[in-house]
Length: 197
Image (cartoon, rainbow, N blue to C red; front, side, top):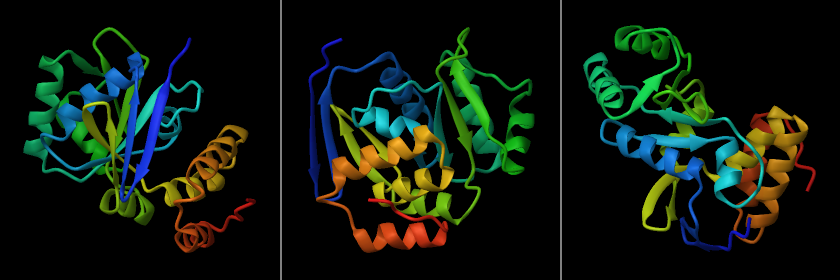
């Protein structure tokens, strides 16, 4: 599968031009819906896929700024009308309660289970910082927001599975000329992990 890809890393912005995958289209559709109602940031595995690492993922993790129940019910209703469904056996009110309890809810295209978006309110200060310091990625003509790379690397090292450590190394190699090393080491220290590179 010959995907040619261009990545430009500018001041506070990443620009990517490439052919979009089904997963990218799904993410862009989810983003268009979510950003009408609240701020979001994408964290975790999809970031490395977006940036060119070929690996599978079934879910895309969204952290969203907490909404009031009424706003969430509008979002939920629009999702259901717009061809999405929620994989949790709850109505919109029940889904909102799950979010309130710091649980993730899963949204997929109607009739499909994979890929899905796992949507949650911030669970900790790292999620809050990812939202506050999110960085724009221009993907062809669309803009999406991802977690700061330094936080992403440290968090992947903290998760510690082989796949997560490989993701961390991939991101480090791609961004090493542009990373804020003090920021990276600061996150690593707070997460009590060593940066092995």
